[in-house]
Length: 208
Image 1: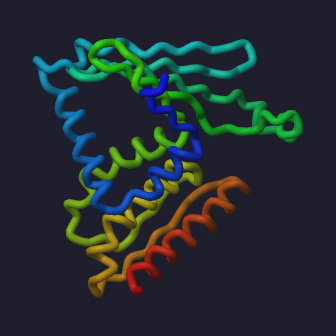
Image 2: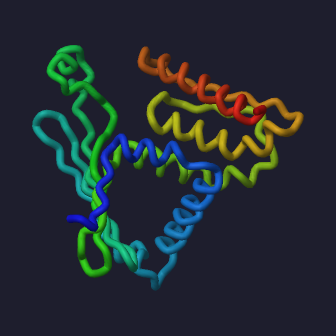
């Protein structure tokens, strides 16, 4: 196990949040290439060669998703657990099981079938989903307003990545850019504060 990469949630968060603009561009390029391979006949990653995902629903209300994927040099499988509705109640909090965000793990095997990585998938999934949304965004010449619907991890990562794309364009031009979040929960209000604070931190860093 010495040569197996194991990243728990704190390590994944620290790694992703340390990315600078060049890191984001590099990872996004890898994602774009993966999507191209998936969309091209004759590649190891083409859809016909991909196993179907499966879903298991427990009697408690929890849903577990199993999502395998095959590429030329690596085989991976992500297992995601979606907490049941009752996990967000005060009684669940007192039992230490409160939470509604999906959690899970990503396992990676190399071409020889050897385990090479075990990665907590919670932050990683939010980052990957948001990164996919940002593929076409840099082609915009300028941005006046951004509205983010929701207040969870994906909302935060959409804001982070959008700001990293905007920071060398709109914020340096005379165009005034604004960002708003739309949500409906008390938890969302707390996230909204974090979102706005993050936006102002980026502006401050730009002006230093």
